Length: 126
Ligand code: SF4
Image (cartoon, rainbow, N blue to C red; front, side, top):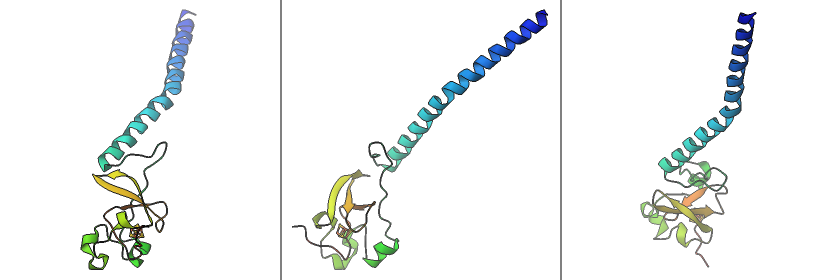
């Protein structure tokens, strides 16, 4: 009988600790994963958008990017003739990544381009 009480008491203690862990675990895991995601964003040098993931940069090897001759540095394309995204009517400044200004471009919806980039669809900002 005493063994039974001890066993029952031990069982409820163990149950309480398991339930306690189960109740706390999601909060702890959420905090850990959230801080890991923020650390990754800091390593990439980008600030996450409020409540969401950072927008990706345009990949110069992307089919659309290649079709419009997109380059991340306008100085590497003689066709740019000194023009760049920052002076293009399709560009809108958004944030800074790795010390470089980036923004949205009407042609590349959902992605960002460097202020210093250029493509063949450049159109002088009004
Ligand atoms: S359309 Fe303008 S803003 Fe968009 S990639 Fe080309 S030059 Fe840059």
